[in-house]
Amino acid sequence: MSSQTIARRYATALADVISEQHEEAEVGSELGEWEQMLTGNPALHEIFSNPTVGYEQKQKVLSELISRTKVRPTTANFLRVLLKNQRMADLPHVTAKLKQILDERSGVISAEVTSAQPLPDATTTALESKLGEITGKKVNLNFATDETLLGGIVTRIGSTVYDGSVRNQLERLGEELAG
Image (cartoon, rainbow, N blue to C red; front, top):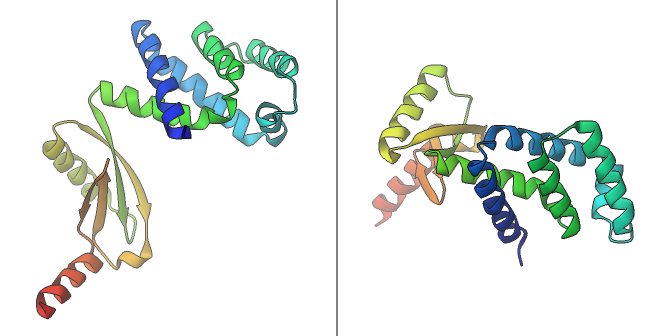
């Protein structure tokens, strides 16, 4: 089973629980902090991902960390479930999928915008507004730069790509002239 499938299952189950208890923001934030702690500390990551470290030892480390971080019971229980099922290494994937699921449920979608140079604020505001009109949802924009684009922007929402790059327009023009 792929890590994305596993992440989706755990994230969906957790999203159901925290939505019912109205703890979406709090638990999401705590899991984000745990993800940073695990990925930022190689020794800690090794303990939880190494199969030669015994479950009891991992459980002691997790219990100590939970008591020090003073997380909500929902977060603590979820971390214990991940540990019990040997899925602590999947926490970054689960956290990302949880954010995506919670955004979808609240009518927010993410869009990846790639441009040759950083975009001015007026352009990002107009783009966010236009994508909101197109999708009928609130859009959360994530920006990246790619100097190979020459100019224009490429926007990805899920599996849909809106390619307004100069490179793409030149390729299409070349095909029309050749065809």
